[in-house]
Amino acid sequence: MSWSKRLYQPVVTPEGKKLVTLSDARAYALALPKARQMAPEVQAGVEALLMVAEGKGPMLLAQSGVAHIVHGPVKPLNRGKPDRPWLKRRKG
Image (cartoon, rainbow, N blue to C red):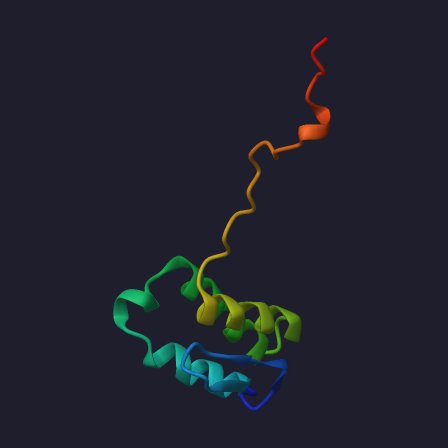
């Protein structure tokens, strides 16, 4: 396993620490509270780290995985009807 591989871009944690290598990301994930470690997005991120460290996946997968570990779940886009006053029918 090669945990010394560098990420494409460092990921900055909410505490201000930069995660530069796979090893940094692994240490960050292991330092999380147990409840947070069991979250699905963290589990997926750790799985991505393992795949890349074992040479079974692209580095972009690890970059995405680290972002999931640090920033949490992806927030869905607002798919509600946008307010478009120019589409309202004119009266008269």
